[in-house]
Image (cartoon, rainbow, N blue to C red; front, side, top):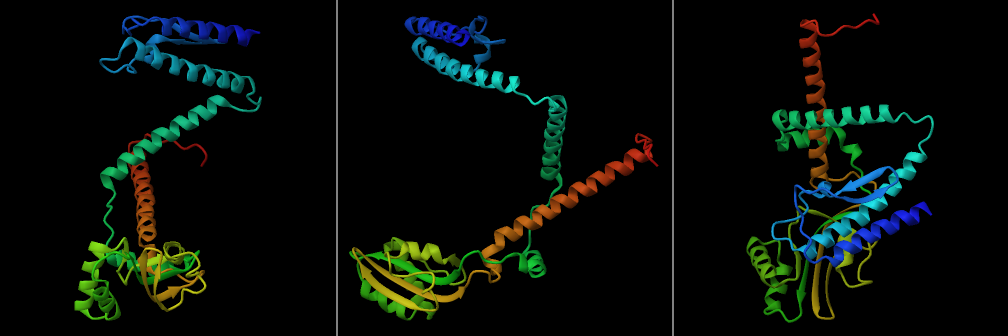
Amino acid sequence: MRHIAIWCAVVGIMSAWSACQSFQYKKNEDRLLAKVHNKSLFLSELDGMFPDGTTGEDSSLIVNAYVERWVREALLLYEAERNIPSDLNIDKLVRDYRASLIRHNYEKILVEQLLDSTVTTAELVDFYQKHFQQYQLESPIVRCYFVKIPASAPKQDDFKGWWGSSSRPESYINMVEYASQNAQTHLLEDSVWYRIEDIVAAMPAGTLSPEQAQKRELTLRHDDYQYYLKIFEVKNKNEVAPLGFVEDQVRKAILRNRKMKLMEDKKEEMYELEMRRNNIQIYTQ
């Protein structure tokens, strides 16, 4: 019954505001909007939610929507507070969380100021060679050319000729230029690795499966498109991924290690400085 009375009061307040077309928000005015048990919501808490030029009707809609959300959140919080386990130390959790936020913010400042985010090719190669066993493939990948061209595209006989002799520099240049202008999809970097699943998904259904995608060349017409596929190399699941495929992961690992070292060095620097200043007392030794 108590909940019903609260809801009736809230609905009554919102209805009254909705009926008042001349409602305008005033910063120096405060008013009780809703109350749930021992928690109250005042109009002043909505400060900043009303853009310049907001009409009375729009203000009412904003207030009503906010009150609806607030009441539900307040009810959830009330029930959560009533069901706190007796062995849960809220004050300690709050202190720990506050300390964590402050520490995280300071670490972010230190990283922005001190961390060198440049990773050279030599560093990438060196890290990869030392940790390559960590980068095993979860699914097969391929190096390939893949082109999907609308059947209505012009001069496709020319493209077929360039495709067939793509190892020649002049043919490759012409092929790339044509695909850039006419193809719906084109992958023409033979040093780039792609997941086989992505290539299979781009082909007509049933044309190719991951198991079939070994070194092969395929040209076919399906519906309104002409498809060209040329696979140069396959790396199977559980094989070590090439550096080119995991370069971003390697770079992130290098930067993560740098960050950890930066923070450890900074902590040691602070420790040594404050020890010299006699600002640290240790009583366990």
